Image 1 (tube, helix red, strand yellow):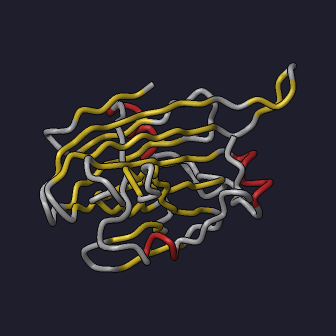
Image 2 (spheres, helix red, strand yellow):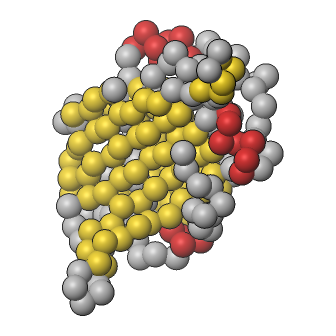
Image 3 (cartoon, helix red, strand yellow):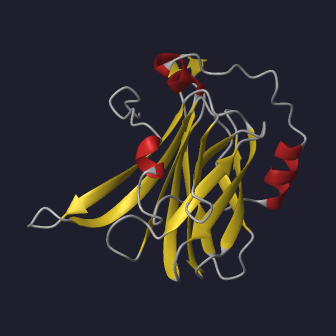
Length: 208
């Protein structure tokens, strides 16, 4: 479970980085995507604070590229209600329109303390059910990797409150200035597994 209070880093960190900044995306089953397109999402409660949003479920999108330093791609995620979070390194624009979400970059450091390979994260707490659009924006020719970890809403069982976890990942190549699109399907239902439909012919994606 993510410690949302401890990880509360302002999106300003992402937008203040050099043009090499954020990205992410993943795979899905066509039948599942079709189901979520017709799913009514407006009756789902929005998260009010860090405590309540964790019980509603969350999505963590992590991404990295081959280069040292910040990822050479940026990412913008649009939720099923049309709200955005992310950073476009080409347009130099950033968004954070979701009630409980954050973006940040974590870097490994070498022996001299210099940033080594970095990974970007976009975390959406209290994610609503439906299809999310993910756009990966490249600042240079690069290969990139995206990993998604998702947790469902907590449900009461004979053993107490329980939730389910699922994951998906994608490897792809991008050219400088390209914008790659994906559809990420998520549901708070514990029986549903997160899925991503890449719209790239050269991507290799997987779901678990």
